[in-house]
Length: 126
Image (cartoon, rainbow, N blue to C red; front, side, top):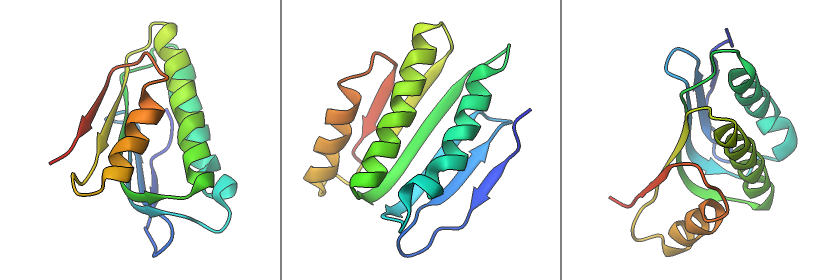
């Protein structure tokens, strides 16, 4: 089983909780870490481990980010592409993206990223 990953959030990096018991990756805060690739590498590796298990799924990406820089958007696209591939293989995956309705740019970003995938998702603006 994949290990639980907990990363404390900072001013520039999100709090991360990868919970293998629930199959959830929860990201919250702002995401513009100095080295985005290094920051997200363990999260993407965790996701790959969860999706490669013989009894994979369900896996949910729960996004509650108020800001993403270009590198963070790339990491998010990598995770969404991997989840979309898993969905195509019959693995139960989903995305819950929480947006402040006042932050129209973030709502548009979520819509743009998710329109390219076939997996189930929900954009919540409450």
